[in-house]
Image (cartoon, rainbow, N blue to C red; front, side, top):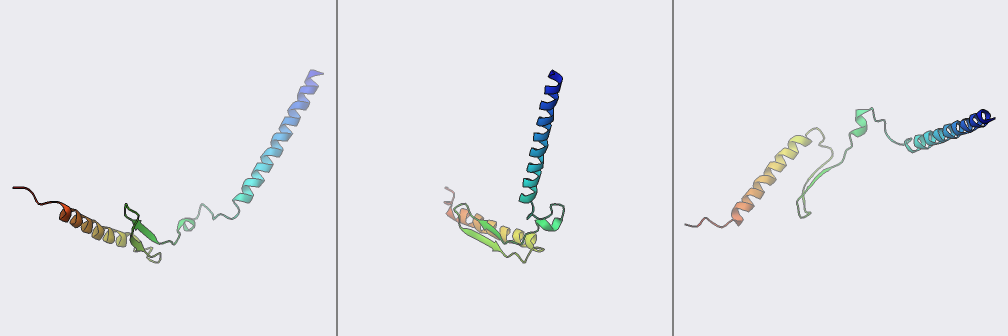
Length: 99
């Protein structure tokens, strides 16, 4: 008698687990339906402009999205220009050395 009841309980638990797994699979599949294929490298190439902000929130540089191939060179060139300008401002703000 006990074995029969235990077998029935185990069967019911397995059935509930299988229905729950199928429901979870269907829900996740429907959520992921509109996403791009993660195995394709083109899925991660998003054409968006690059924006560089200063610490106080001002926009320093905006690089258009069409410059994807030249972006790295352009960013480095502009960052070098920005760095030099910042160094000049810091040097100009410092008082001359005391004699």
